[in-house]
Length: 196
Image 1: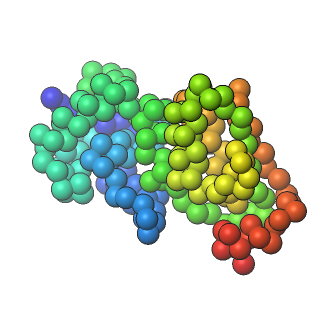
Image 2 (image 1 turned 90 degrees about the horizontal axis):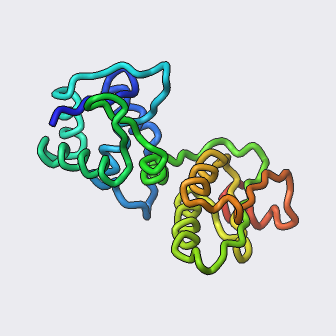
């Protein structure tokens, strides 16, 4: 199978993007092979659709992920089957929202705190328990911490990630996202997030 990724100008640019945005945390696991493959398809814009040759793509991805070409090809096929990638042209693939959701925990980057708090609260029905559990595990991976029951808080802007997560899981009717200037337990939260 010939695969050509669309995305940044060269695969090396995509690799540098992933290396800059992948932030290893003490308790986070390394990306799986499928996550490495999906991260190699970042980012996508309509203005940035140049192609790189499949040989260079596979060679460089193999050197990063320590997987052979056959495994990578099978992984890309599996990613397409599972809905993480979609074909935009013959053998040209693009990362889907589902694919972005799968790898977003590896792309979290701590930014300068702008003195605002991001609060997610939800009332997800029991019939969506599995989705609720997945939602909260992803909130934790994005840097949110539980503040009260069904209320999570984070000092960093995660608007896009929460939006994508709620949209993909079909939970927007049950989820609210607030940006607030102050909270009554501000000092306690600053300590919780090591904000000094």
